[in-house]
Length: 341
Image (tube, rainbow, N blue to C red):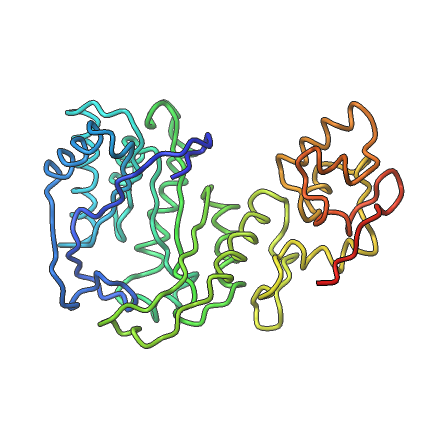
């Protein structure tokens, strides 16, 4: 996992139990599927993790669970595991806890006081798609409500009540490509989560069929779709794009063979390129090949003098081959070699 500070750590990513009473159509752990299940008590899971941690095998934990006896009881078990790690073993490191469908507000708050990150998988962008993907789950009451409580806790309660004196980040995940949802549906929900619920990141998991599930004969979704969804999601979160600006086609999907930023730039910037030496940071972020860090590098370099060549951009660590069709350097379009193959 990559932490917010950029540090990489090795996680034990596991389930408290692989038994589940829900029948999500895509899931290998769904109720009724014939395979051996396993369950650990909170004390057993905490002890096992600490053994791995002391041996230097893992540096943190990502703990989820199948659902047994409802979301509330399952959430109690997850919170209890974290409490044992923090209070009995005095473990100060990284814990990511899942919020279960139907978790109560007090459980959400308890998880946020023990973990570095919490998440709840929405799985689908809306109620209609969720009904086709996981018919026993309720989109608003079971999935969105705990996320709303997490956002409310972050904004209404003092920071010192959170783990290490701060309120943690919240994430979610979608299953992509199983029930006909469009990229527009997924990114509409993502945009709402970023803008209104302080969600730090949306993850997109491409559907792969699992044997002995209702969806075992469906085709896998193309991996390029997952990549483009992440790119568009970052445009919404980090680059100042609005949902309406993303280059959806008539079916509500992103281009298959081009990243969404370049697809936006071609009709908007090719004939109206951005002057590198004068542009605001927000305008620099619209240029393919320039991200938040490279925009700041350009602004710092401009304090020392004008940028007049692609070679200078390359020396600044910017991919000038991507950038050159959409920029001016000191009032001129930069010379660039045409690509014939």
